[in-house]
Length: 237
Length: 237
Image: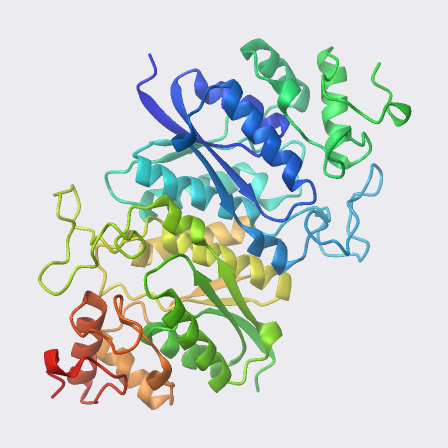
């Protein structure tokens, strides 16, 4: 029985696609997507809509928020046309910094996404917010760590109405990428509709950080990734 | 000497105007403003630009972010054309709720504003973010309480780069509104350029929650508010 409503942050990537499948087990879905000037914005939005359609989520339960101001602030190769998205073996900022955070890091990004999801949950009366953050893949992203999610849940407790009782759930946080693929397969998640590539919009490049993680995960889990790649540069066996 | 940079959230109201004057004592200013579909959006933006100009803040240190998605989510009389902004003696939602939060409350709003200010601070290398939140005026707004600012500072500590060391400052949090006026006067804050009315854009209405608080504060502090009001309905003596 699904009487409860959950807001799920659905970027359209593999992790958020599996998170949606997990949330759907016990909840009605309200799906939220953000455009923030990422280079594959249109392709990610298509993945969001395709997955929302797959789960027959009605228009009133889909929300696309425009966060282009995030891209305008700069500071990330995901959104800044002057910075290249790194490929495998070249994942760090070219200028050395005190930390080893990849150039694709968008400062404090997940807080913007979660603030939107929590505001919408409060308006809708939903008590759960799901986000597909994975600590393992991005150990250097400050906002992908358990300590961050403890802090955001404390903020939500004290920053929303007393009776809203919203909790942020991170079902993938401690999973390996291959376990996420397995989980998605077990739940029938529409991974063929998801999009992870940071660079391309038609056929995935297979070489950016995100493609490498995804391909490695499918391989380790023993599945073929159903998404089209630029065949000549990818070992998918 | 002002070698340090601070990001100040400047809505253009009285409190953020005084907060800007406070931040300016020891910092170079970077001013951030959000448009989120509030009914007096254009007037607030004018106040922001006027105050920024008054302090000679260059264009690269002014950022106006578009958060219309907040208004699109609904749930607040500040942004929803279907809901009236309450006037004095009529400050609560018409339908009873478990809490006495005014209808002007925008769910989790300050988290969106602070997320922007913190992201921008991280990009600019600023170590302070100032916000003019006042607990006293809005005891029912969850995101105007000290416990909320403790939680946001914990989130910022764990959610940004280790070396960013950003702290959110709330210099007005425990002040009475009349003390804010006095502080502003003492620092030469351009209160004549600020705008607080929730309803009007030319002459302040004098009857909305925000106008009443402002008028009462000037009166108690022993000053005349320099902003024009609809004269016939306001006792400014």
